[in-house]
Amino acid sequence: MLLTRSFCNRALLRSDLRRCWPLFAGYTFLWFLILPLRMWNDIPATLQAAYPDSARRTALEIIGSATQAATWIHLFFGLILAMALFSYLSGTRATYGMHSFPASRGCQFRTHVLCGVGCVAVSNVLICLLSAQSGGSHWGESLSWLVFSLVTFLLFFALGILCCMLCAWLPAMIVAYGTLNCVAILCRLLVDVMCGLFYPSYNDNVLSMSREHIVVWLTPVLRLRFGLTAMYGEGDAALLPASAWKSLLVYGIVAVVLLAVSWLLYRIRRSEASGDTLAFRPLRPVVRWIVGVLGGLGLGVALALILCCTSNTVGLLACIVALGLVCMIGTQMLIARTPRVFGKLWPELIALCAALIALCLCIKGDVFGFERRVPQASQVESVEVFSGAMTRGNTSLTTPEEIDAALQAQRYFVSRSDQEKEDAARYGQTVIFTYFLKNGGTLSRRYSLCSADLPQVKALTETDTFRRSMVLDAAEDISADNLRYGWVDIPEEEISRELTAQQSKDLYQAVLEDIAGMNMADPDLYRNQNCRVQIHLEDAVSDRDVAITLNLQCTRALALLQEWGIIQSPEDAFGAVDDDPDYVDTIEYPGITYPITTYAR
Image 1 (cartoon, rainbow, N blue to C red):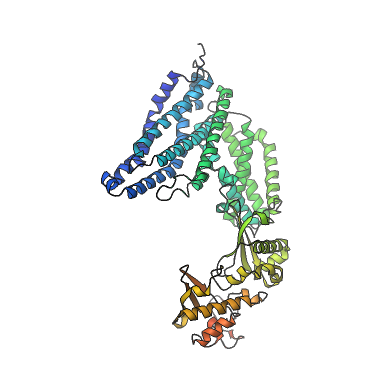
Image 2: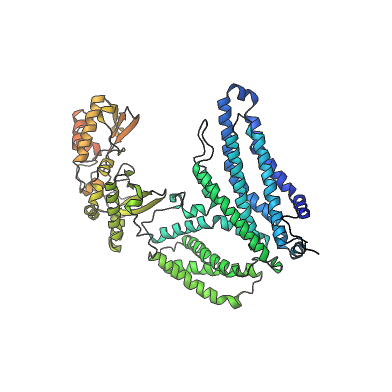
């Protein structure tokens, strides 16, 4: 038969429409339920006539929820439609029959893509026209939804077509599609878990990534979700923020590139590969190694956690190597569609064992610098320092001098020897540094601080912000003239006293003087002193409550409380339970075989 060359083949297009019209009908009906029907049901003509602003807000909320749903709908529909249009590639007879059709492979590919994209575009335009005038005029927002819906569909449809080109077996297409959508975020989770096992100071997680992180870009669902977080406000605010339009532009270009790559692969794809797990032989070792390495690390760490042997390096390596071998052997069995795979696979298995052991030892030795990483001052927007027993919440450092002090403190913690780290972890308190970087990401590290470390971190503890955080929950400066009233409570003694405006000002001024005079090198200052007095002052200007937690060095504030008759002595504020600090409790408690020494708190 003569081979015709044209953009698309009408007979093939009609065949695709006959086979896939139920999918397009169901897709259109689903969007009809989500957008036009909700518009007509939630925004009747009477509401639109009586309360046009309320009707418009309701319409924008419906469009916003539909925009968020578009990502998930097209995530599944893109693969289903791609598999329906290219399902013949998984059958030998169907593949030979299609490839003997009097049309070039390029024409066949363009016809399938035109059928999918064209029908979805017509469906989306119809839904947009039906919903654009309900609840008032909001053509801009409706067109924004239309663009978002079309681009997300094109992205996932192109990704599904690529999986159909790479695989020649329907289950393999599904697995490949899910892997391409999730592999980046799963790798990041694996890195976080392994760093958490090997590095005590590692405190990062997936949520600390910025929107511009490469892992976020390689996970389209996550990136699109981030782009819609600041969706729209009230009134005439735009529906899609700038970050969402940026994502749509990038992913639109990516979709076109994926379609071009799929077209090239379809042209060189062998008909004999139909029914195979992978359509291209060069991909087989790549897939084996990716599954072997990532599966060995992920499943091996999971097995080690179940067996509680993560602290034993040999046991952890044994779990990782064993599961890596299982993953590589299982992958090769699925690729070859036979259990007889050991004849030529054993050299790769030996190499995989060596690679997994070397990779784990490199991570344990911090070859990649995860544990030793200290950001540059030019990269940091602000720093939060947190320790529950030391400060009254997160201490936010924003000035260049304070940021440099935090970086200097972290460099000292990183430079400590292993023995010093073990001693600090045994006797010290946890301190968490969280850096908010200018690129939108965060970097968090956790260390243990003991008394011997105080001289080395003096630059940090002597900052005004850190001093104030030892007593006040508000690190920013608050004027005493803005205080109108306050109250002091001692719940254990059922004491409650309201403070006048003048008393609030005097108490706050005394607290500021105590903060300025605190000896930050005193180790007792960083221990939980169990203050029983709860002090709250009300700032009338910012309409906020200022909580104050006193310590033993707040002598001026304690003297005022004693002068006002709230406490009898400074010791009453800290709940002294015993007159004799050397009192030994000799009562035998069940399960405790040593005496408990009770010290005055």
